[in-house]
Length: 192
Image (cartoon, rainbow, N blue to C red; front, side):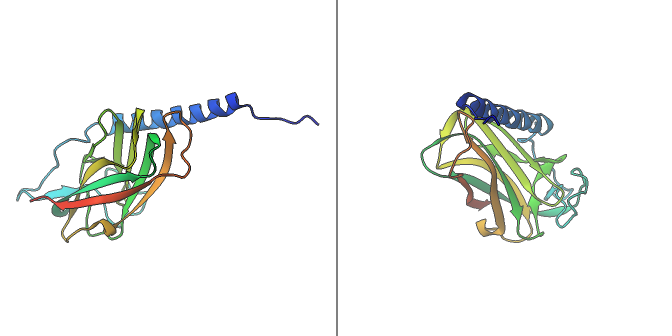
């Protein structure tokens, strides 16, 4: 029986193709959510609202709309980790309660990247989950604030109102980072 060995070139090619797939997925998200910096929509009385449907089943349409209203809060996300250059990171954010939701316009999350030249995409799901992805071919060094999104809630909001999980992270060479950096909420600020 012949022993098969994986060469470094094959491993690098596999990692490279995984990163290319990740970058293409982020690009597709960006194209479908190109209005990340769009103005939020409001109601006749000037209150802001979200398209998220708190408590809705995951199979519900991502464009389903509820009339969740509330005060706007700016939620800032920070990547923690060592000084390794991060080339790509994807994370999910779930509110712990259904009292509010991430602000959206036509199903697109109202978020801004805080990493200069990074390609970014942010989308919301019917269950209230926010997915964020950033790719920076030059890389950025953690710790760093990476994104800010608008969250609407009729009640006061704090960082512990959310669960954040990193689903993918790689360096500028498309190699998975180990240990995986964490993403935390570094600030929640009510917009007056």
